Length: 106
Image 1 (cartoon, rainbow, N blue to C red):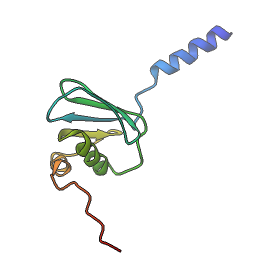
Image 2 (image 1 turned 90 degrees about the horizontal axis):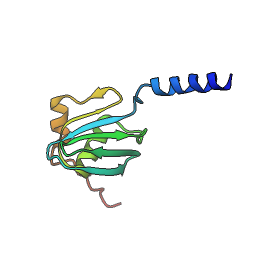
Image 3 (image 1 turned 60 degrees about the vertical axis):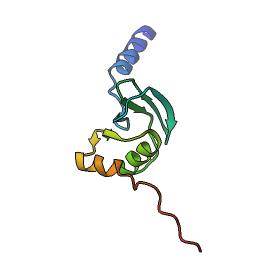
Image 4 (image 1 turned 90 degrees about the vertical axis):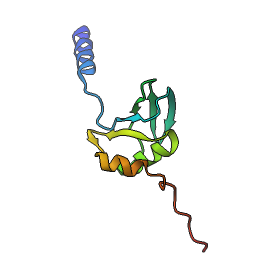
């Protein structure tokens, strides 16, 4: 009985789909990188394809893309949880004015 339970648990574990919170990107300037950033472990291959594992921090997709670009460089693609940015959104994400607006003195 124990063996059957273990086999059933193993079958369920191997059949589980990838988590929807996973993220993916493609760097315009490919390089190999491994980085923990914003709650994800990012791994980028020499072809520029990056995979982000982990749940990540709770933030809008565009903000996550901008933070990624600010840290790793421009992208040609950015997606998370089955939702991908359009070409126009990727262009906005890569825009050079992604820096934070300074706060006015209080």
